[in-house]
Image (cartoon, rainbow, N blue to C red):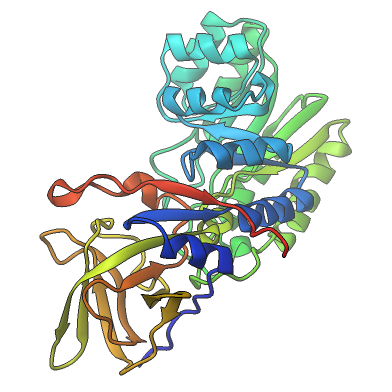
Length: 382
């Protein structure tokens, strides 16, 4: 029987869970701020990926910490601007982009990483004299094939930009290895690609922002402190920043880490709808939607029963349990096979590691409304 993943929600989260109408997401602001601050302190720059957690209060917290905001489309750009963020604190990276969006980004002074030679040509034609960055493909893998220019396309891209008087402002490559154990291993292909691009620059600019993207692993699904990618940062300094410094270029090393940092700040609260005692394992079905075919099937789960003085964790009759969401299909697995206590219909399930992506990827199955995302602050001192 596999060990149950740790689940230890802060007291204020448990208190809020006891008094809300489930299902709902709870995002713990102190945890969110602490994790964002730790990664920001380690790197030269950190662009918060809006798509990972677009709650207005989360975006406002990122802006208050001095983080940039990374957007992938017009709606995310609207959300970023609604925080009051200045245009130059916004970065844009996406495989699509039309003239209207490019015009808007340029007028704001946002930082754009162009994803293809077509985008380079469009930007150069519409905004001569305005600098832009380039996204490079990190090869086949989680992000590689769909996104970015090949290093072999770099000379053509630079020729387009220079002909229009557009300086090169940045280079970006996203991680491409599927689910390794640490961010250093995950980002190695991106680092190799960026090192090749740095070596291919015939005339480095005076300043350059180099982003190693995000996609950092979240294994195991616990509330442990975030990895700061220290070894990756040291390698990037040695292989990217130092060679450019020797050629007169000042480099800013950036990351755009989302789930790795944000997920442990949130939980999902749902009620138990059904319990089946099968021959090999117990099956628990929640009265709430979940992501169909999720990336993971080992989210930490705890069952709680409301009492006069709050929620009480269950610890009776633990056994191998598979927890499902409410869809009319078998693929929406929350946790498979972990030793969990036996709940009753109406008990609360609190699922950890739900602070990123899930609230935006979840579908309203069987007519259920999308669950709200609520921010929880630290309890005041007595």
